[in-house]
Each structure stands twice: as C-alpha cells, then as structure tokens.
Length: 207
Image (cartoon, rainbow, N blue to C red; front, side):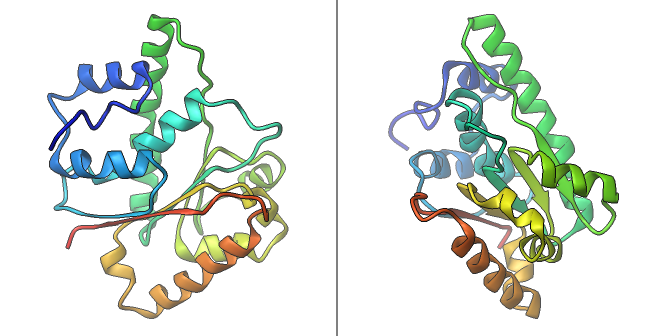
C-alpha cells in the first residue's frame, strides 16, 4: 500500500500504535484511510487480524482529539451478536484508551477521555438508567438490546451517533436477526438529527 495508513491520526494515537505493534495488519492498512475519511466500510479478514481495532481506532482518535459536544451524547455504537463478545470488546478497548491517553500526556496534546457503556440482557437496571441520563461516548450492545433502546426513552441518547460498527456480520445477515437488525439500523438513521452527516456504517466479518 502507498502512504502511511496512520497518517491522518493524531500524533498521540500514532505514538501509541508504534509503541504497541510492529506494523498495521493488512486489514488495518486497507481499512484505516477509508474509515478515517468517514466512509462506510466492510472489513473482511480472519480472526486475529485486528479487525476490531481497524474499526475503532479512527473513531477513538476522533473522540479524543476533537472538541467535546455541548452535552453528553453517544457518538459510536458497536453491535455484537454475542453478549460475551460485547463484554470482551468493552474490556479490550481500555488498552488503547489508556495507552493513547498516556501518549497525549507525554506529548502535551490536549485530549478528552471517552466514556464507554455496555447494554445487554444482563445489564443492571441502574446502569440502563444511568445511560439514559448521561450517555456514554461509546455504546456497546447486541442487536436485541439496541432495538429495546431505540423503542424506549433512552433513544434520545443516540441522536448524535456518527459511527455504527456491526461485528460478526456474517453470522447475523443470513438469519431473521439480520433482517431485524437492518430495520433497527434504519430506525437509528431516522432518529438522528436532520442536520447530521451521513451515518458511517462499518461491518466486520471473518468470511
């Protein structure tokens, strides 16, 4: 590939990546220029090829180094068909967030720390109520839980969503869950503010 796929990222993000990985994977090399430019993308790559970071890093970079919204609002929604995967992703996001924060501090780059919320069928009611009152920047959920949010008062938290990431899309699309999720995504699109930019959709698939 020509050029540096990390070129559009903040110096703190680039420094964290360089200190953590030898080089981008092919999936990241191909995906980052398009995703960082705000384009929708489908990332097809084997398990363990860095697909999740390919999808998330540009969004994290944007969250940390662009001006904060006037009030709390969810900007990224990640949808997993598996509750266990959603929990893993929430845990795995902590490493880049902490690492990029440290690099920003070292370099003297102004930043803000994104907040994360997770919603599955196991999420306690107090956490659901907290999300409604104070939306997190990154919302991790399942197709069914996203539908429930969009049909409740908590949907107001999703009016400013910029990016939606659907993981394991190959496992969802051929089923009734896939049809249901497609309708849910259209609900999300309709909910967004009239002056919002086009919703960025990123699909991740192992096949």
